[in-house]
Structures are given as C-alpha cells and as structure tokens.
Image (cartoon, rainbow, N blue to C red; front, side, top):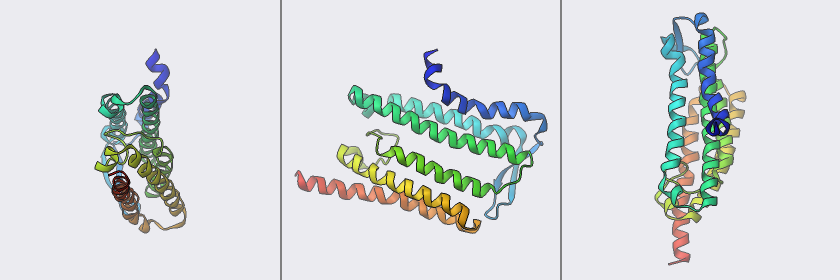
Length: 222
C-alpha cells in the first residue's frame, strides 16, 4: 500500500495506454502506422499488437530501470540523508516527465491508427520541446550520480563543476525547448531535421563547459 501511495501517478501513466488499447482493440486496424517520413507521410506499418503495445511496454521497462538505478547508484548511496532524499525526489520527477512523454507518443499512435489525422512530426517536435523545458527546469536540482545528467569525467570529479554545468545545461535545455516548440508552429516540417544539430549543441556545450570549469577550479586550488 505504501508503494501504491507513493507511485500512484507513475503507475497511472504506465497503465493508461494499456487500458486504452484494451478498450479500443476491436476498433483498431490489423496494421497500424509506426513511422513517418520527413513530409509527415506514413512509410511503415506494424501489426496491431506490436504497433500499439511496444511503446507502453518499453515505458514500463524504462520506469523500472530508472527507479532501480537510482537505488543502486553508489554516489547517491554515499551522500548524506538530505542529499539522498533530494536525489530520489528529483529523479522521481524526471522519471514522471520522461514516461509521460512516452505515454503521449503511445496515445498519439493509437489516435492515428483510429484515423484521427494530424501532423505526427509536428506533434513529436512539440512534445520534445516541452520535454526539454520540463527536464531543463530540474537539471540544476540534480545532484551527482552515475546515470542521470551531464556525466563527464569533470562533473563526476567535482560537485562544484557538476552544479555549474547542470545549471548551464538546464538553462540551455529550457531555451532550446522553447525554441523548438515555437519552431513547430512557425516553421514548415522540412526544417525539423535541423533539430538534430540543435540538440547536439544543447548537450555538447555544457559538456565542454564542464572541462573548462574543472581546469579553472584546479588552477584556483592547485
């Protein structure tokens, strides 16, 4: 009962797509769309069970993995009670955000299979933008660990470098997410592929910044 009380929202997010598939099973076609090209046209199909249940099943596995890794992480284990409690709280929130994103994609696949027509690429682009905004808001609160965050040799070596890097990374993710969401409404789909380069910049700059922060810290404290 304690587990249900603490994880009821996470369980609801994980179970909801399965319930939707079960209720709509007879209305779903035998072949459902699972992939779209750059023009937003469907270019791959899969069987009903695989196409509608793969994402929800993977979401369950991801939630379990994130929860387990948080419990096993040596850095979190060695931290003080307050820091450990904060780490669990932040990681739990990030887990909810990520699994909510996957659940939204799962519902979108179900809706498209039921012939509700919309621009799937635009939908995914908006969802990724919102995901970056939400995750970025919590990056500065994430404490050193081995599996979540910007894990470079320099952030893992120094708590100060970790904090500075994640504050910068969080701001860049929020700004990038807002830009991506706006671009989804303002730009035609052919520009969406440039988001890959955009994401590379968002995650590369903080990693490089962590190196210079580490060098600066060691120059000040040789």
